[in-house]
Amino acid sequence: MPVITNIDDLKRIYRRRVPKMFYDYAESGSWTEQTFRANTTDFSELLLRQRIAVDMGNRTTRTQMIGQDVSMPVALAPVGVTGMQCADGEIKAARAAEAFGVPFTLSTMSICSIEDVAEHTEKSFWFQVYTLKDDDFMQRLFDRAKAAQCSAAMITVDLQVLGQRHKDIKNGLSAPPKLTPKTVANMMTKVHWGLGMLGTKRRFFGNIVGHAKGVTDPSSLSSWTAEAFDVSLDWDRIRTFRKMWDGPLIIKGIIDERDALEALNVGADAIIVSNHGGRQLDGALSAIRALPRIMDAVGDRIEVHLDSGIRSGQDVLKAVAMGAKGTYIGRAFVYGLGAMGEAGVTRALEVIHKELDVSMAFCGHRDIKTVDRDILMIPRDFSDKWL
Ligand SMILES: Cc1cc2nc3c(=O)[nH]c(=O)nc-3n(C[C@H](O)[C@H](O)[C@H](O)COP(=O)(O)O)c2cc1C
Image (cartoon, rainbow, N blue to C red; front, side, top):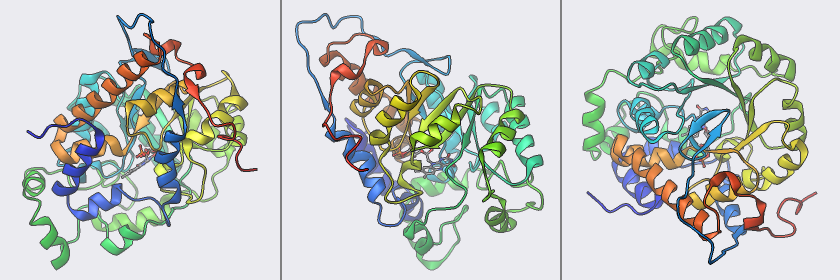
């Protein structure tokens, strides 16, 4: 068993164990990847203020996200195709999350279906939907999530059109992977991954195939995907989706304060400041830089969460200090999953928890709920460097 001390260790193993097509799928941003890079590097512009000689005993990172208890303010972000990073990936990640006491969010574009994840977990999880044209299908997704006892729904609002990731096109990304001489040669070097995939029946988009109109088998999926997303989405339509779900709702994918103010009128319980991990608009502001502007705009009128770029507990601490009530990890848990399955996701959560807990103590706090901007040293132009 390799010694894992940080998220980068998991990423190195992940890279060795998973076919290149799926590694590239996760480890890419759109176009030049400027925003993908800025999401992580901008965290290091925020410095932490160390305090000494304060009682650092009896610490807790326990708090709540949308009124639900969490062992730390970190949830697993919805990540499509997770079941191709590792056989039965969504079930394994959900189980690791529930054991750790943090929320797991299942993507619409998952391999394991909502029902399948519910059957293999005990606690409730969250379900993410994209904004699709077909109202019947949208309603059925919400109904299925309700029947599976999901405790929150998340609507992703930043994917009306798709950002381009060059490597996915060059690799011919698909689930299951197309068997070409190149992909077969690469997969033959990923023995553990291959054995896992041979041993599972979960290899297609479980929430779509057999559920969406006209998608009876995986071959009809690509034409469905090209047609399904609602290019003409507006706030009225988001309000329509809100009416389809009567439980807690999270709006994901806000990076501009004007949109954050609009989101106040939807009746959501939280918004996620996110640029989709740098996978949509290349050249957009990093999420952590956008956060203070959005916090200043919405104040405490809605719970604000953040994702995009979190690779450590220190990053979580900085986001929380800036005002986020919760954060999400996407790639950080995928690295763990691809490296070591369920145990790898647990390890990713342990690493982040320890970094968060110890860094919080260095900053003179014992309870994550008391952390505020006072622990940060923020460059004067951090959030208004650009007009
Ligand atoms: C491989 C991959 C697939 C993703 N799929 C989805 C998805 O299906 N739905 C969604 O709302 N966001 C999706 N996202 C975005 C994540 O939910 C999250 O916003 C992003 O990963 C956060 O950035 P991070 O990876 O730097 O933590 C995906 C991200 C990655 C890396």
